[in-house]
Image 1: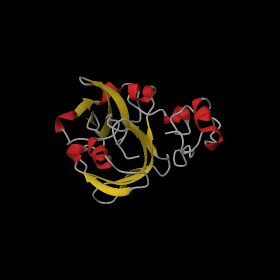
Image 2 (image 1 turned 120 degrees about the horizontal axis):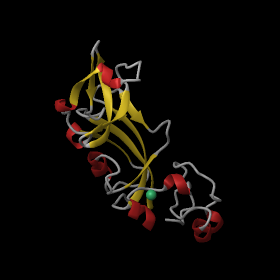
Image 3 (image 1 turned 45 degrees about the vertical axis):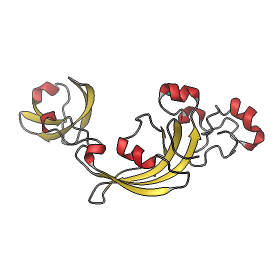
Image 4 (image 1 turned 180 degrees about the horizontal axis):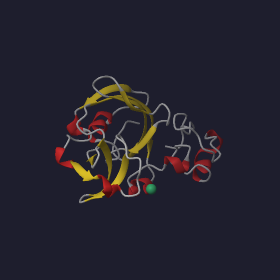
Length: 196
Ligand code: ZN
C-alpha cells in the first residue's frame, strides 16, 4: 500500500535546521501518525511522502515558505511589562498562548527590558528551512470516522489496524492480530496483515 489521500501514515522523523541542529525528532515520542491529504502536516513534507511505500526512507529539504512560512516582522511587538500583571518571572524564550486578531496563537518572548517586553507571534519555525530525515513505518486505510474527522485515531485504537482492536479487528483478523485490544506501539503496529 502506497501513501495516498485518506490513508493513515506513521513516520519516524528527525528534523534539523540548516546548521544540522536537531529541532525535533520522533525518537522519544514514537512515530507520528497523520491522515494523508488532510493538511495534518506541513505541505512540503506531505508532498514528499506522496506515493512512498512502507519501509521507505528519504531525506527532504523544505524551504521555509513551504514549511511554517516566512517570518513576518509585523508580528513582533513591544508590550509594556505591566501588561503581564501577575506573571512575575518573565524571561526570554517563554512561550504562551495569546489572543490576537487572528485567534489564539503561540507567542514567544524574545526580549525582556526594564519596561518593555518584546513578543514574537511568528511560529517558532517560521523563516527556517527544514531538513527532514523520514522513514515510513506504517501505512493503512483510514476508517470512515477518521476520514470524517480529518485525522487518525491511532491513539484510541492502539493497534493501528483501523479496525477498533478489541471488537471489529478481532472479528476480522481472528487470532492473527494478537492485539487483544491492548495498546501496541505504532512501530510494531497490528502486525496481523489482515486488517487493512
Ligand atoms: Zn476524531
